[in-house]
Amino acid sequence: MKKIPDNIVNFLHEQGYVVVSSIDKNGFPHNSCKGIAEIKRSGEIFLFDLYKAQTYENLRQNPNMSVTAINEHKFAGYCLKGKVKILSQDQLKAELLKAWEDRITSRLTQRLLRNIRDEKGHPRHPEALLPKPEYLIAMEVEEIVDLTPPHLKEPSHG
Image (cartoon, rainbow, N blue to C red; front, side, top):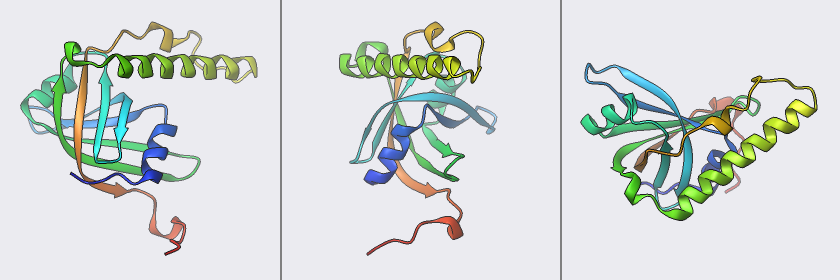
């Protein structure tokens, strides 16, 4: 398991969602958006999945997965690769569900504020229509890829 540096943990928490890539039974990549439930600096990331659909089936057959987050404005991003375990709805911790509900509330608030400022987005509030998570994806990070182009990286002070 690879430790996740504080700057990457903070970066991931700043994003509204991440893109998860799994592999289907024919060997093709499948991408979907997931919400972060928790990140442990020791090298674990926990993601909620609201549906038991393609990602769920893929991960049951092949535990290899990647998590990608991009901040277009900062022209920065990271891809975390690893193996996953699927935790059932019964195994979901109450504090993780509370964190998910808080995140949804925050996203709704941000959408309402943008709408008030006349930055119209989706005509409805999709976050309010989301179901509760079906299961939790627990990934042990084995590799971290910095997607920021080398010439744009800030110099390290070490």
